[in-house]
Image (cartoon, rainbow, N blue to C red; front, top):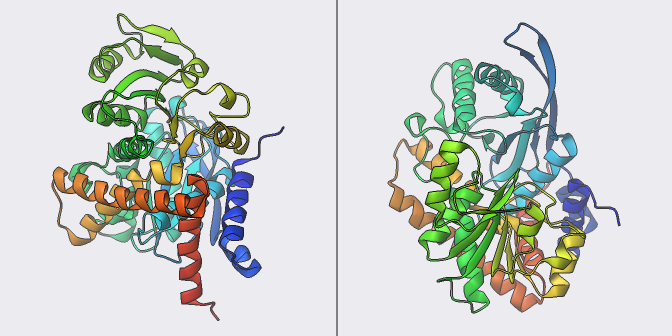
Length: 412
């Protein structure tokens, strides 16, 4: 069986939600079409003087519920179809969590590991200047994603501000604190994954204290999810990065301390395993927090976890999803599980607009409140409608966007 593309998968999920909600074909036409799609050429002057051209993208999938919101990804496999799919998922994610946003996504088809710091800055600034006419705090607010971080957001904010003639901190989120960033933003996605994991265990009547977890991915999502889960009393038994996984470490802190010094996970006393072996560990919870398509038709049959919490975007293919459902595995979908990042991005945007900043505890309390509300809505919808949690999450998100379209009407 051939795995669908990310866009085909997103469209099939949307079609399913529209059928379950009994929406019209007119609504399908509206909801399945991105509002604005931009492809730009991004020239880069290398440090040696050579000029190379890269493709950049920005998709604003929806602005019906507010300005569009979504990350900027630097990765060799970035393309228009994937960007549209991720912008669509961001639309349903923002609606599911009831944030006043539509969905967006952008990026450049480049491997950031091949760029010097100066080259990365020049590429980021030129990309920002190319998409500048369509972004802004009331239009579209970028954020970090795969291959980008707060440095890129600082450069994007500065480029936009220089062109505006004054500082505009609200044009991006995920910025350094001193430039208007929010406390808690760095760990937000992982914190949201941890909240979803805790609540999923309680739903399955499993005591979170001592529950075992394997995490595929030890980056911005996986690491912070591991820290939060360990603080909640769960046991992280294995983690992995692009080079493979390890088990047998005493704590996430010990493993992280080793990683910072040695740039690998081979801490004393650990045992190596492949990423595939990690997926098949006998644990209570599996968290795929790397890139898309980790759980497939091939890997899903051997998964022994009782719960899968999707930390990455689209880590499960449709074929893998069907197998997990048949096995009775509870899958907490990405648009719910990893929504902590966009929720705290919303907090950052609100703080920038007000020029009034919250303390870390206030951010954590508000994040937990929104995550819990969205989680309970999905849980209740899935139970009452006898649908999967993924279907319930999409029905809630799509339904809210469709309602907003109906209330606003069609101009002219």
